[in-house]
Image (cartoon, rainbow over all chains, first blue to last red; front, side, top):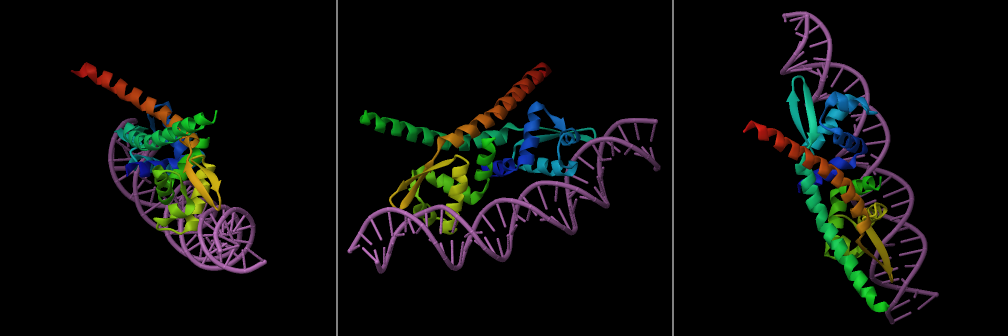
Length: 103
Length: 103
DNA sequence: CATTTCCGTAAGCCATAGCTAACCGTAAGT
DNA sequence: ACTTACGGTTAGCTATGGCTTACGGAAATG
């Protein structure tokens, strides 16, 4: 059920923006919050949610915390999504073969 | 930005349950709502959201509407997710090579 | 130690999302 | 035409979630 937390985490636009910013590499909270339209505590709260969802991991470095993308949450999401993907493809394939007879 | 709608749509547990039920094949609204802890209008509202997110498609059949999984929304989601997937893998690979020198 | 930097946490406010109940429209069936 | 089945829409309530402000704690710096 871990994909549920991941989906809920990525549903919020601001939180998604934080997550997407981590594509540029591991960053500290202050740096992440810099280009954001919301306050630093808000970003901190978002990071907590992302962490609990297994989407990011944290590493203390002196007085600052470095956050980075965590593959675990992504893997769970991908696996869940692929279930539907295969089903959708099968349905599409079946539909194509069905309309094959119409020609 | 269509993946945003898809993520928001799949964030809600009830809506996710509706979506997952469609794995058993295309179904009418009444049938979907049957095994649900919420009312039929609620399911109808959820289907509307899923449809706007491109995750399901609708087909009228007499007096009932048949809903099925739509590959479009799934494809968008997958594409978006894969961006992070590659990054996470690269980071993992880099980390592995870095600790290679420690042995 | 005092200070500064960096960040997580708590309290409280406000907007939004999901639910139910009631209603309306449409397509069969008689 | 009347009735029944099916499902989308609306209004209104309530709970939840995200934001800010204020605070507290830990690590570097002097």
